Length: 424
Image 1 (cartoon, rainbow, N blue to C red):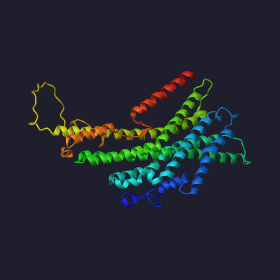
Image 2: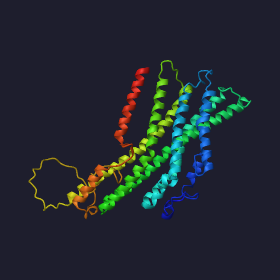
Image 3: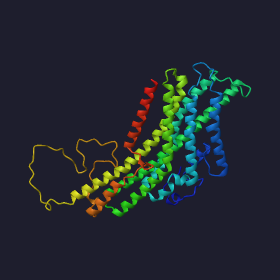
Image 4: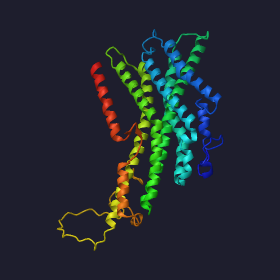
């Protein structure tokens, strides 16, 4: 990919086959989810119907092998097929709507990069180039495990339906079709999750760049306008992805509870041959959901950290504005407590640099030149604004922060304990 540093190219809103999204478009075309024209759109829907719906149905009703031995029966196949098909259908419909309505460049906010700093553009280019590798990183290990299971299942003679006249040829075709269906559904799901992660990372980069305004002598009006611009893009992301996040959470929760219910029955006989594919499906769905929730909570945490940074900026400016001779002081009785020496940057001599310290979350004091020309009332008004408008990713008005994740975890744990109480 070519670097996103030319402002004239970044200002484009109409897609071009030779732009920096060329590899993305090629990937979408090979995945048959590209709908740039009517023919590609028809092919995309045809492939979804075949690999997302028809192949799973045929696989379940014709190849379930209910009369096989204990190691070849697939009693949990319906949960696997229904779970993967439902999340892939949700992902396909949402991705189709996103790209058709906004275009790939606008959907990834590439048309807005011309207004960002060179640091943000270059780092977002790196994130953009890595996104497809991240999809492969999550999909390939699971696909290798699924391939090993399917090859063993067909090679050991579980299927004896010669729909092509020859048993081995029929098994080969059925195995390839099932693997293609699994790969298609899983990749589409992970693709939408990773694209959400990519968009959230852009906002993280913008917030890191925005945090630098507190280290220079900035105008309050320009700071407010930039924060409003970031909040607007966060609202756009929340509005686009809120339905996908909610339905993904519902479908994954339903899938996991169903899996728990049928595997904890008193008459169930679990082994790696029966429940291995179900476990692999659960790992896949939970990984995608974790990508969504982690990305949302990360950007929400960073957006809320702006309030802390602005408060520290205001405190440093207020303390520095009072000279020693201006304010009368009452006599202070000193005790024998010895306080640790703190340097000018707010760190003790023995402190180790934190791994998570960045522009938004650090313990360093703000330099005096960053607030020398800003009045107290302007600083106070700006801090109050940040306290009332912390921003972040929201789902129908509910902020996806760590407290929300704790609530979701508590609800899920209550359901799990209730199911275990009914089955064990």
